[in-house]
Image (tube, one colour):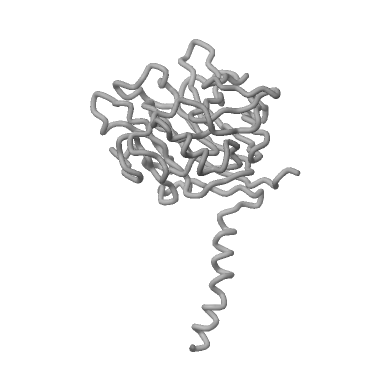
Length: 268
């Protein structure tokens, strides 16, 4: 081996480490969305195969990750979609900046107006069935106000899951936070503090607006029959210690300008 080639070979691990470190800022934040493309993400839209980004639903324009429906025609047809980051996480602080824009796709359900979400502790998208509507996961529900009525955001929904609140197992599908309402197309910053199978907190403007613990498989609201039972068996039980992070397409256009994560140490 020539001297120059030998030096290059010896430096490769160091260079790879430096590249990984370059994605982390001085405060420990890692950018999951790079503002340029979605190559680190996997798209799963109902009735379509994994990584078939039907109609360019998830796209990057002007440095934003945009969810759009201009190719859907005059009916949404319950083609709920999710874009999943490539790696699972367990203990972390997640921060997203989002805004709702425009009008809902024709045919979208009434409850989905100005409605999206961040899914955490999600199943591997490779396990999802072609016609499955939502991944089994914990949903941090993002809602925009309609300009008049109060409507909280950073709520909790539980497709294929349950949680414990105040020592009691909760099996309802959705739970409201104590947040204020965010009307119009303003940017909103939402954070989620996740400690594996222990406590999970939803935060807005530095305030905890919802808190629960012991995320676990077993709830309803996933369309594929028997799927959650399969996941429980594969998981070795119901308790969720971590999983994949994804962003929703539920028929209303939404922009994300930041998706970043800060790993946290495990609690004792």
